[in-house]
Image 1 (cartoon, rainbow, N blue to C red):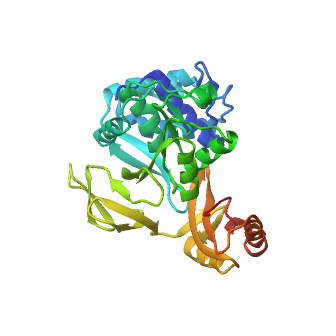
Image 2: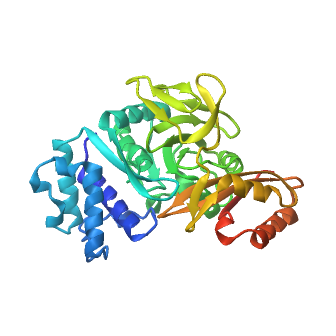
Image 3: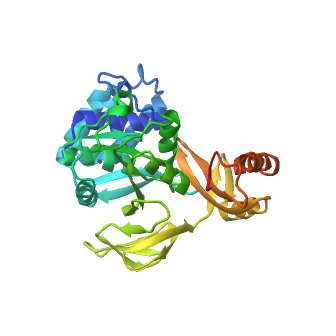
Length: 365
């Protein structure tokens, strides 16, 4: 991976937006050259220091020469140039930020070779790509792999959503999204078919949404993984099992083995193995998540929802939107109808606390 100033600028600016609580917009102007952390981004001194700490950790700058010290300037491009220089001096590791079930930021460090291996697999899996369209920021492991490293490996330019002519996409364009951003994109273009490639990760993709996306002409891959493991498995259709990436094997239903190194990784979710290469996801091992400042037990909440009238099945999951977690529900009604769905929403408002109400509901018809 040979970093460029443009790529480093994207990571820095996405980390800055996460610190200030701003959501990813997909506007190419957000990444224009010549910006200042204080004058243009309106970061306060404490926020600049917080950003410097995150950029230092991400690029492992403190392991390189003193001339790469970030706080000697507040120009974004100066920082980006120092990041590129630091990677030329120390390219063995890369660090990503993630959040646990209590929503506390923590770091996960990988060997660069670990990330490069996944990128090489993705390049083979997706084949020839004409461009890559990011519906996600670049700073997470998902954003890095698919919108920083993969474009370089595949020789495909990054085309931001603000630049896309959606009704003229090539079948070899790759759209990189999450369940939330895919849902937003589909609502923005009712009736429009998008005959291109797509990938979805970071949270469970509800089966009804998956089926709807496929009906629009997409060739959509759902990837299961985590910051700790990178990609673990993928599938190409809803209601099917995930297939392990080729370099993973199961030690048991709770542990993965890296076949290249022999290292063991614990899975964050309870899974059911179909065979030695395929699995389905049951639920998170730790069912307690902090939503809107309240610690919720998803299994208890699921049982509470199942007690409502006309509910046959319910699946809950959490997904990240900007700097917060949102609750999503996949619901199957005993008797599905427009009125039944409206009544279900009324019951949620009447019988659940605000933090317990799913922000996004997908009905299985």
